[in-house]
Length: 212
Length: 212
Image 1 (cartoon, rainbow over the protein chains, first blue to last red):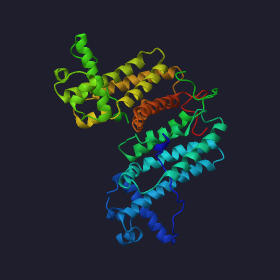
Image 2: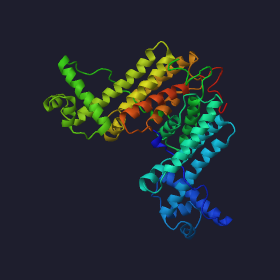
Image 3: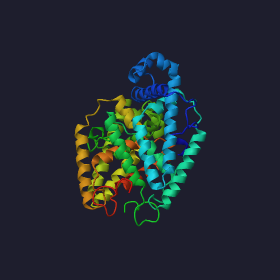
Image 4: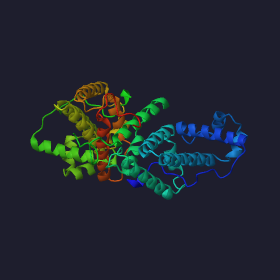
């Protein structure tokens, strides 16, 4: 299942051009508004609605993002950057088990907020990004984190990165009417996944036995 | 989330008409073939393909199921009957924790085999069945089973039936190329869900603490 990593990571950790702070504020407001609207309404939401929600004029919006496609691509790139930051944050934690738990919680939260956007992006621009390198990076980083977490004795010894991919893939099956319900369901899901991965006391290998 | 129970149960536990054994064999073969083809190809698979796979003549197929709709409805009813049998089997186990584990494993397996069929059926015949009574039955039965499983000390004390519904809903997010890969993923998923629900030794309430 390693070919199905649901959250590939981008190769560009920083935006290309530094901006003055007021311009950066407008840019962030546009991106926040676009992210929220793309996630709830899909990619067809009109540019004027994004400007309205961001509380900027249409001229400001089009100066920063001359086309809808450039805005969609930037939101996607930001999201991929956030995925990379989540993995790096997990790796940076001196407590590897806590780092792994944070990766699970933050990834579920990110996807509960952006539900639908990534899939809509991938369906609309299937060849926009080559994820090979990002997938390699993420899989290697998560494997290192898992190895360290096992050394602490708190991650089940039969854990593989495929288990994490499986549970993040399953997370996409969670549907709920409102954003609040979806976020609550995602948080509970992350909590249960963490407990599923936890080493069971007194067991040398894997979980506590099938029905034991 | 109790309004989203993904596996409602039917009110009819037995087929309406007993059949002679050769007729029953043909009927079962047609239903097996239809179940497999609907699950992999969708509801549009031609009747002649179902007859071919079942190794019965078209006349035999149409004698038992004069229309595609009657066959689709019967496959669905059988599947719902199987859902009810799974819940009843869990309740009948004198070891309630083992019964709950079996409900999780068998439901995941059923849905890995029939992936797509239930959703296609519900989309095509949205008003065909009223699930209110079945949902009530399943929720009550699972709540009773969970109560008894908690008394054994092996089910986490903060478990609710919503947790089970959440994890079964998430199961639908698992996609995989081949049936074999999907079944393996479903089995691993069921195993992890069971471990997520397991009471952690030495804890009075719920799981072992967030990041502990």
